[in-house]
Amino acid sequence: MGPTVKPPDHPDYAPLYQRAEQQTHIEHFKKFYRDTASLGFEPSTIQLACDFFGVERVLFGSDSPMDSRSGELFTPETDRTVAALKLTEAERRDIYGGNMTRLLSRERVKTRRSATP
Image (tube, rainbow, N blue to C red; front, top):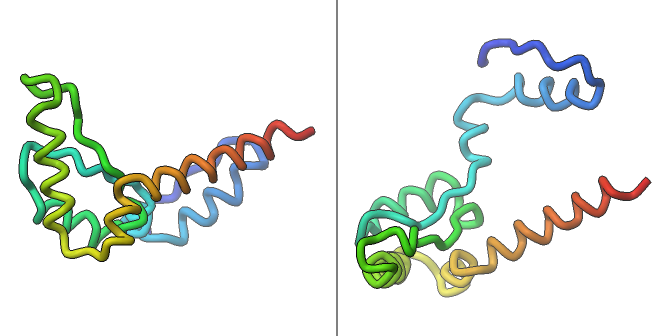
């Protein structure tokens, strides 16, 4: 178990800290999202991410236009990487947009709930 952290004095935080103390660090890391941006054709790296985080937590990203050719290099290489993964077509579609759509929809619901008096 990880180190104990004193929760802030706000009562809403107490349940979050109690749940966090019951999980290992690895369980916390598995809640992260990962994008597919890498330095070129890297299917093994992204396959590891899919295996560790779960395909549902991998989002398409290319770091464009950060490359020296304004996206002409990284985007096709990232696309080629996703095509080379050992995934079903449905999982591939999720990486290309389904996962982000679900993530944004969930956030929109949270925002609406918090805005409701």
